[in-house]
Image 1: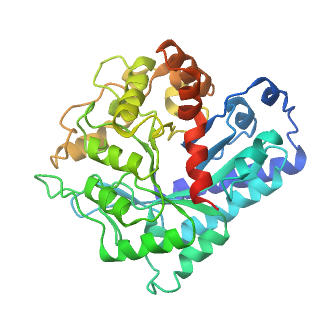
Image 2 (image 1 turned 45 degrees about the vertical axis):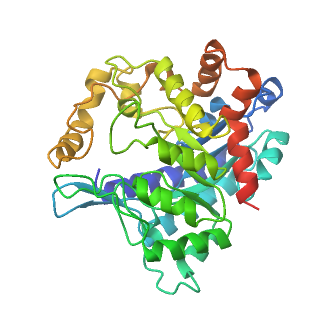
Length: 388
């Protein structure tokens, strides 16, 4: 998808949501909240085109990626996705309009305490996140951080350092010289950014970062660090998956590690199932502790759209990813030499995934208190700790 198409589509969705709210308040009965006792928090999704999806998801809160993307072809022919200041500032303002226009459904997540309020009022707290600090790369004065401050004032509460490839601040998971991964460290400017994020109580997200950047960030930060969405490299040996030492360090920092829904990074099995997802969570819990394991999506609330349209036919759905995958295989990026055969776990590419994960954990003999942690309480703890 081109930058123009991507941003046009995002603006169309956001404007449509805001307009629809004026016609219908979507005052759906909050009765579901009375019946649901366990807290559900998702580590990454987006504002849906249909706000009825918020209720259907059963989420009490989630990290909401409001990024606007520019697709850039790099010198080596691979694609990078940059979140620029102008694009993301416009997008976060549009997202704020949607949230403020729908107070019966959505609540701006500004502090960790807002989750309890959202539960009491049968609303869903959305914590704005941007998947890449490219949006503040133009900040040249480490004493003022003008762009970062503007995003914070607009409600940004979670900032991911980079997306796939390195930038001014951090190394990316896919940085590669054509023969091997570069595993770049946090830069000097990155250390200044970490201090600025700590000062503003913005949660630091090391998803898509290189392992060394993640470890450097955890060491530099005065607050817990999270990986909102990812997978375990000791299960799938791929550059986008995290080594045990990173997961362990995140847990030691008091942070959380979210297992996402992209099945080609969850299992090498030809037919992915919910048991493969539970295996990932189990591995995170064993490495980082039960307080480290959480749920993430990284697709729209309802699921990966193209796969839904294909009735979750992975053999067809994987085709849209193969050109990108092959381009990385040609650069010898770790794990991309193995061509994937699936994109989603069919049972979880569904609006009711949280309940299904809850049930699967119960079948795997996770006790109720541990399911509480994984499905929401761990995220709540971190957000209350950092967003004050």
